[in-house]
Image 1 (cartoon, rainbow, N blue to C red):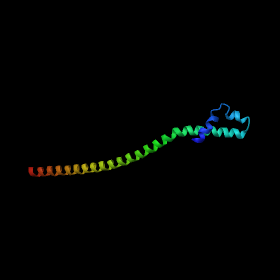
Image 2 (tube, rainbow, N blue to C red):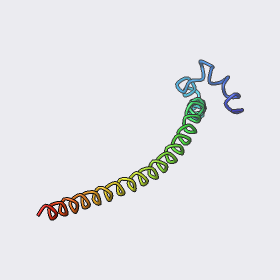
Image 3 (cartoon, rainbow, N blue to C red):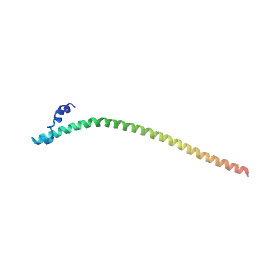
Image 4 (tube, rainbow, N blue to C red):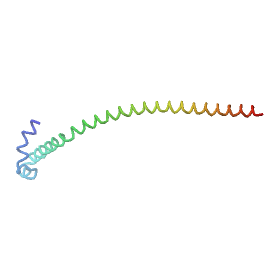
Length: 106
């Protein structure tokens, strides 16, 4: 940040363009391009940095929620299995009751 503030006065100078500096020296042109690139990178990093942090936090929250969902799905599956088992027992008991009624009617 300190370096960016120091080169800001050069970046804002309308004469400090790669094309204008290239007339003096190719090495100076490269340095000019580098300074401008660092300024651009600094601006972008200020925008992207907080977004990356928010993304990490969101991904962590997502993983936590997915783990909780998996646990709830496992519990739900246990309940569904119990209901299926009870339904099978009910069907068996009803069939036995019907068989007994049919035998009693004879």
